[in-house]
Length: 576
Image (cartoon, rainbow, N blue to C red; front, top):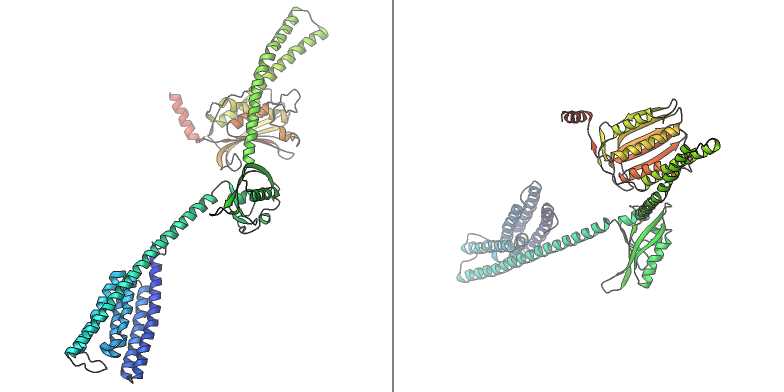
């Protein structure tokens, strides 16, 4: 099937036909006029000029009619009819049935075959032959008077006319069949070619689509070190501008300061030994250190000759982060196993020491410094037991049991606990702000309350006697991981105006056993961080002299209902 729209094809055909028709008509009529002038037939020459004018007018009228929306097929039929009539008149004025221009009947026959294939060529040839034979018979019968004079009706003249008509008919039919067959073959070839082109474009589109949508970078380099192809992923990984032309450019010009990658490509190109699953580090133009995993193989042609190399590579930054997380998880698992042994080996004798000391203190009349030492033993034993408990809680954090949790309710109860406990001293205040009523998430209620309480206690200790704490909850769309799509999240902020956290302490604040508090275990914030991580969320801290300290939690928001719906649910539950 031809890929060009039908309207465009018809427009192109009509333009070509108009042009060729005018040129051929001018040449034919011009030749006939010259022939008649040589024979001093001025009257016939004038008639031919008139016919030329008719051809021009008819051609122009047909083209205008086509532009006005007339049927292309009907207009071609009309032009063929006009051509047959004009050619008959040219034959008449240039010598009658014996005119040398009678052979020009093959022109409309050729047009019929060209545009309407075998059937059109055959029909047009039979019409042309019939018109010519009828003209010959009218000439013999005296009904038509040619410029040569009246043809006397004799048996010999009749025989010559019929023979001439028979020969013309044979030539006309042959031209019609040949032109129609030729047109059919050309059309079939065009359709086959169009199908092949379409198939090639489809294959090329599929190949280009696959290469362009690969998440891995792909670079093809020829034997001269020039880039043949570079897909979008390779541009992104190597920090090459999308609009920059890279084809046939030297590799070191497009990707400067990456000698290690170029050395790998040249090594495979020279030795012929492909590089499988290698890992190298690159320095991008923006200063970023880039670990990549790379496979390099030779590019060969159909004769197995080397043409260059193909490099397929991936950015391993995220992979390395995941590896570190896996290693961290493995370390935590080891810590969990160790904690069980510690609890078994230390807690039992510790309980014995504490219990025995209390019994001795009650049975013996210990006073003065000895009594203080016994109290110290008991206090430190209890503190050590608390540290072990915190350590076990961090190391053996249980798997969350997810349920629908009302964030506002959890925070309000946490605030109530902080206000009425001994945590907030002096003139300090706690204020709650909600920007998303009815916000709910799927979480472990007990664990999420533990996080809020840890952050609240941390804020109370930070502000001291006269500080202020703001706990704010809202809804936000944000990506929880680098490169991930944005998602709706519950945003919880614990803001206090206490002294800023030192810059050397800030990066380590969620690390286990890191603490700046006297007597602290360094496990409170570490445990909070692990809980939020197990809820597919993030937690971070910002600190400045002007804005104070802000702990920010993001947890995917799974459910949100308005206040009216909450009341309806409560009413239904009360009925039950």
